[in-house]
Each structure stands twice: as structure tokens, then as C-alpha cells.
Image: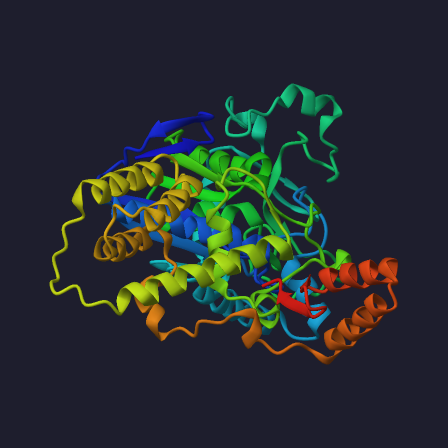
Length: 477
């Protein structure tokens, strides 16, 4: 199996430290708000990685954290704690907010078909481990205290700081990165432990040797918890590409300084961004969508999963309701194929794949083992279903084998409702716009007709004009 390693900027043969065991740590969710589309993609592709490792014969210990304290609004160790911010926004305690959005995260992941972690660890339940790590770094001379602010890591003490992101610290010191915390020795230094400021009255504070009311920094939790459950050195660490220059760079620094320069992680796997209609996702732009938003539009989570599989995890994916509608049609087609094949009587359990079937299986596994080439694997699946030289019983077996990697839930497809756009209820608001457009066409007001069609598209509905003058509505699932 091969994986792209951010550390080396190359695709490498995957060789775990203690085969067949694989220790994998995934940066988890900060539970201050709803899980959204961008999270779905990252964690779904993590799931594809884990399923592929298992199918390749490895035993995966999958550890994922829950960030419920310490993640500030800025990577530069400034701003409000995100949990405190969420509590104010929703008018609940930080503890209630944390549990609410942790539950919603796993609810979303379950609907997406993602496997649960072997260990899910909350930052607030590992304060001792984080504090001990900071104390060890202090003992080894890697820290300094900024009065009234916190304990900081001195990045100048490491000769290879920034190796993951290939950072040029000389340029940083010349002003490439703005120093926002007064008292920092180097612009790249980062907070290990923060102090409550006068009048702040934080809900989540702990006593420490430096301050009676203090809390961990964001970066320390991942190093402390991953090392607790996977050891001082482990195989794979995943995250978004936005974590490369700061969060993951700082994880490496504090971990390797603690252990005496032992390489912290062997393979770093990073996922590219998901954009919505070509823009960054944000609530202010109205393009922040949850799993419930997807379902309310009439789409099924496996269709979204199928959409993710059509783009390589290291490439950026642009989400639109149109491409999700296309994925839903593909999912409907696949469901019908599976349901049809599952109802045939093959007469025996052990089915020979034949020469052509074996060729597809070999090419499929090679694609998945080649840095998770899911677009190629998906293409092979459709080619196989269209190939008349592959018998129906062989198609059935191959689909089940493919899905051990894809995680689409094809084995239970017969229990799913096969929906088409005609099965779905159209809201009154949409019906009203359809009526207006129909009248515009009667009046031959083509400009008005086009405007209303575009309005429907923005609301997630697609109109197809029929030869008999009727309008067929397709929900952009």
C-alpha cells in the first residue's frame, strides 16, 4: 500500500512501525457548533483510509479526540475560546454545548456511514496528561512564561521546527508572520498553557503551577492524548491541510521535544478543502450546511458519500447542489442495480469471479492501495456493471467486495427505500414559483421564465421543460 506523506512531500510505501498493527490518530471536531459539509468530507475520507487499511490486512487502532476546551478563535493564541463563544451564542453552558455538539457530530458521522473510533477522547478528561507534558517541556528548558498570558513553547530551541510545513523561520522573524502576543520571543512560538485574564470568568479552568485559573492550549491536547493511547511514536496522523503550518507543526515540536527528538509520526495524511459554490463555507454566506440540511433537501447521505469518492482526497472539491443531484442519481442507479442483483437466485454461495471479474478486482484493489485513488475505483465499479462479460452473480460479489472499501452500505440495500424525485414532497413555496414560471412561459416571457428557473436552482431545485409544456421538477439532492 502507498500513501502520500506530507512530511516527505511524496508517495511512499506504507510500512507501519509494528505490523500488522497500525496506530492512527485523527484530529477531531471542536464541539462548539454544528458539524458541516467540510467536516463530512474530511472524516469520510479518514473512514475510507481506515477501511482500506483493514482490507489490506492491517489491524487499525483508531484514536480521535474531541476538542472541548482550549481552541481559541485564532491560531496565533489570541481571541475567545471557541467553546465559550458557542455557549454565548446558544445561551447554554459550555458543558451543555460540548455534549450537544459532540452528540450531533456522531449523529452526522453515523448517517454518513463512518466507523466509530476505537477510542474517542475528550480534552477536558485528559487535563492531567496535558499538564504533565507541559511540565516535562518546562523541565527540559523548552518553555517560558508571559506574565498574565500563559506558558509558551520556545521554537528557537528546535533546529528543525517547521519541517512538516517547510517553514522559513528567518522570513517569519523578518515579519512574514505578525506577532500578535506581546512578550513572545519568536513569532512562531505558541501557547502550551493559558491563564484566565482579569474579569474573564471562564467556565473551564484548572489550577496549575503557574496560575490558579488556567487551561490548556489547543495544540497540547493532540500530542498528549495521541501519545497516551498510541505511544511516543505511531504510524498515521490525519487532518485538514489548514493544520499543516500551525497545529500539526506545533504538535510535532512539543512531542519530539518531550521524547528527546524521537520521530513523532511516520506518515502525515492531509485532506484538501471542500468549497461550496466556489467559496469558503461560512454562515454569513448562507452556504453552511449540516446533515439535516442535506436530508431536508431530499438527498440521502450515501449520495453525498458517493460524491466525495469521485474526487481524490488531496484535491479540492467544489460542492454544489447540482453535483449532489448528480451523485443522488448515481446512488439511485446503484441502489436499483444492487436490489435487482440481490433478488436473483445464484444457486451457490461460492462464486468464481472469472478472468474478467478477477481483473476488475485486481485493478480496484490496486487503485485503492495507490494513495486511495477513489475516483479510479468508482470508475472501475461503473465499468464493471456495464461489462456484459461479467455475469450478474459476479457483479453482485464484486459490488459487495468493493463496498468493504467504499462503506456505502450496499449489503443492506434491500432495506432502503428507493427514492426518486417523484417520491418527494415539493414545498408550497416551490410550487408557487413553478406556477409563476409556467404562466411566464404561457405569456412567452422568456426572460422572466429564466429568472424563475435560476431562482429555483438557488433553492436547490432543477426544472426540466417537457415537450407537452409540463415542468418536471428534480430536487438537487
